[in-house]
Length: 291
Image (cartoon, rainbow, N blue to C red; front, side, top):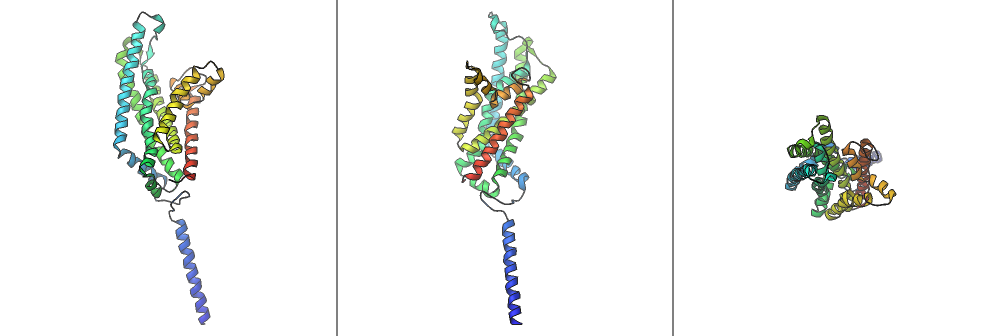
């Protein structure tokens, strides 16, 4: 009887240890593998949203973007009107779609928002707060997905608002040289929002890979402006095809809505592919590197 009681006690003790192990395995684990964490992806998105809007740099970046859009739209609209009225007929651009001015101004405005997107990840590495972030969201792919979702959710409406501002600034300055079609204007401002959202998500992935604000900004400038300009102006035809496959060139074809080597929808798909590939590479790097 004593032996039977001892066996039961040992069995109960082993069962308790197994149950404890099960509870430990189901709990949130910290590190690369990670475990379940409270709130899931919605909770991670909410945390990233709160962090973003708690930073003064977010507000300054948005204010700066609107300032640059207003200034650039005014310059481009004034230049267009001036070219149409000067004595040099080769400068004439004719009557232009007013919202197209906002599209053109996006080439410069994008870098203000890109800097904000980069800081969402590189700023945490610079301050060391990335360790705290990964303690709360140990699943690294979930953390990056949350940052990407917040980036897109902020940049899309911000881009639309920027497009509206650029159109509003350009309209009176263009005068009779501006044509304001409601359908085209809506399409243009929506395209600006989509372009900025996808571009910033793409650069977020770049920042995740490089972990350097300066390095990510340099890469953004090269990929979005310098390299496409060099390739387009090259006499080698094959380099022109390469330029057409770059994210900024594809984005311009998408926003232009007509012309180009491929339809706007193809430009959108190319830009989206760059964003997805960048996030995928960023996820791989996150899993393999220590914070």
